[in-house]
Amino acid sequence: MRDSRFVYLCVDYPEQSLGMLDLFLKTEKQSTPLHLHASAKLGEARWTIGGWTDLSWWNERGWSTQVNGFDQLADGKVTFHRNPEREFQFSLARFGEGKWQLLAEILNDRTGSVAMRFPQTGDKNELRTYFTFQVGKEETR
Image (cartoon, rainbow, N blue to C red):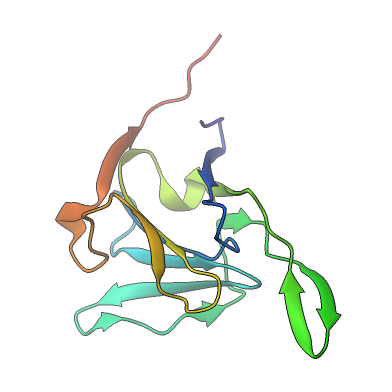
C-alpha cells in the first residue's frame, strides 16, 4: 500500500517469533542494497564490495517501524512483548518508485537463526533471489 509520501508494508510473524526481523531492500533509487534490522532496536547496514557493513543503530532515515518493547524483568531475565506483526513505513523521497527488490528473514527467539525467509530460497547476498515488485504512481481519485 502507498500514499503520496510513503509505502507501507506489514509482515506477519509465526507464533514462535519474538518479532526480530532483517529486511534486505534494493530500490531503483538506492545505489546499493540495504539491510534494515528491527527488534528491540533499529539499525541499518549497506552492501559493499566486501559484503555487508556492520549495523549502525538508530539511524533509520526515511523508514520507520515499531520496536519490541519489554514486558517485564523477572529473575534477571528480560521478557519481550510479542508483536503478531511488524508494520514498516518507507519514505518515497528516499526509496522512490519503480522496481523494488526485497528479502525478509524472521529470526528465532533465542538463537537468532532464521526461522522463516521470504522468498524461501532467497539469499541476502544474491540480489537476483529477492522478491521483485513495482511501486507505481499513486492513484488519483
